[in-house]
Structures are given as C-alpha cells and as structure tokens.
Length: 88
Image 1 (cartoon, rainbow, N blue to C red):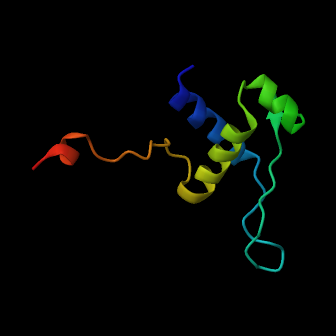
Image 2 (cartoon, rainbow, N blue to C red):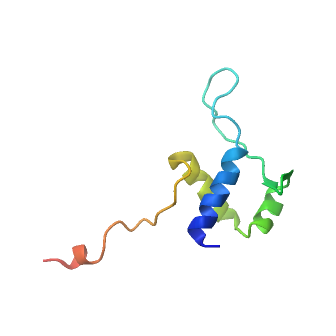
C-alpha cells in the first residue's frame, strides 16, 4: 500500500475510535484517547504498530496531523520548487 493511502486508511481507523473532544462538563479535552482496533477487536498500541506496519513516531505524527487538519493527506514541508531559489 502506498504511504499516502496507508496514512488516510489509518486516519480513518483512528477517527472512528477517538474519544470526544469535549468533557462531560463542556470543557475542551486536553488529551485525546484512542482505542486501537484490529479486525474489530481492541488491541494494544504495540499490536496496532505491528499489524499495520507503522512505527511509533509515524503513528504519533499521523495522530497530531489528524487533530490539527482532519482526515486529509499529509504534505511535505517543501512548498516551492528550486527555480524560485535560483532566479536573479
């Protein structure tokens, strides 16, 4: 599976099993909790890493991107081409 497709798939899986953004008192939640599932069964985070072949920091990056931007493809930080840098 391609990296982008894998990221989107994992974002969808994590979005379904995320805790709500608001506490029972109406305050904004400081830390989101995730339930990691594989084949419909709850598994540990380590098992989730192994089953979906993703590292710890990559999963952390996907989760933080999803909180900030939603379920959209991640883009590399380079926004412009080299031609802009060498123009005189």
